[in-house]
Image 1 (tube, helix red, strand yellow):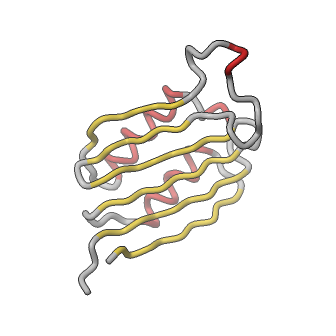
Image 2 (cartoon, rainbow, N blue to C red):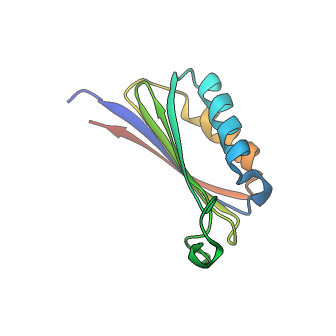
Length: 123
């Protein structure tokens, strides 16, 4: 079978939580897409901005920012966990990209102390 696409999955811990803002994540997507030569499309965020305080997430496993950066050939998804200093990223594209370059840039951007990376060829 022919390869349909590729997916890079990053689980990062010991990250700099000051990078978990919409502004920083938006810049991360801009720069990442330049580096891996992807055309950016719509960007969507899910977080507690504008949510009444009593309805905000407080659990370590849910408090943070999630975002989807659609790209012409699929998407890049991020989930940050503020209290745990963790970032989870999935990059999927039917257009090839350099996963090592994407990983290196992402680890540096979020100041990760530890990163587990998995690369999958989708068929």
